[in-house]
Amino acid sequence: MATMKSVQTAAVHKVEVVDVERPVPGPKDALVRIRACGICGTDVTFLHMGGMPARAHAGGDIVPVPLGHEPAGEIVETGAEVTGLKAGDRVVINPQDAPTGIIGCGGKYGGMSEYLLIENAEAGKSVAVFPDTVPFEVASLNEPMAVARHCVNRSEAGPGDKVVVFGAGPIGLGAAIWLKLRGVEHVVVADVIPSRLEKALAVGADAVIDSATEDVTTRLTELHGQAANALGQPRPGTDIYIDAAGVPAVINTTVNSAKWGAKLVMVAVQKKSDDIDLGGMLRSELTLIASQGYPTEIFEVTPELVEHHERFAKLISHRVPFSDIHRAFELTLTPGAAEKVVVSFDAED
Image (tube, rainbow, N blue to C red; front, side):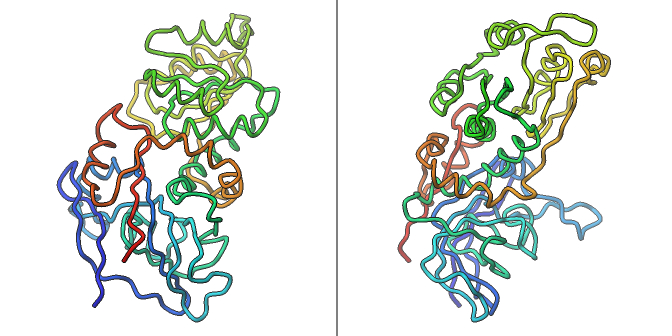
């Protein structure tokens, strides 16, 4: 029996590398050698719990989770009934298409493994092929950039809009890139970490706000001009607020700053917060829009990721070899230590 190494949750805030059976593709499947896999905030959530509750157990027992839902790799074997894909194809993966559960998010398989079985492999549905001009590490950004793209799509931002993105992590910066590629006139990024704000400017943001030291409403008025809410009270001329931070201060700041008819798009996982000032929302007729996942965007983003791969590569702060996997997760668990960690796998058997 051939085996492979795979990463799963262990104790709280710990991962372990386990030897598991290497999957064997059936007639409709493909086997992918993983070459890179990103670490995401969802992985950190599983680490905080030490796994996830088993649905089959009434007592809610915590069971290990095979990790990794941002993989990119190379097909090494296809089943006899697979068409449109072949050994040697470099692919990004749709983790939500797996029939045995979302890859790396409670499903049978995790992408932080030497090999990954793609069940019912189908180009454009479960995987998308990308050229060798794009490094595997950059290709692994496909999934989080689909999340960011869906957020921007939900905002319906147009060229004449003025937008602020709260949170200069991978999703926030990805949203800023998509907004500029969409032709949006002015994009501001707000964060409390100066190095992240520098990165925001590097990927194309028009301006940044250090919300730890600057008054956000005042700065937005300086950048976007002055407008008013429904009662005529002065407000910044910002059209769209994007929450990629998930902290109560963002919601409160938006409600207090929003002009008449502004939009707030929530893409970050929301932390428990105080009550929202619904009266403040009413005074601005603020539209609240939730953005979850990527209903259609998972492979819509791939051609543009390929075209602008050097720009997206700037989002990666740390490239860590699989042999140093524990350090990769320690970096991700340490607040402010890393923006985006991607794990690289040796190409050799």
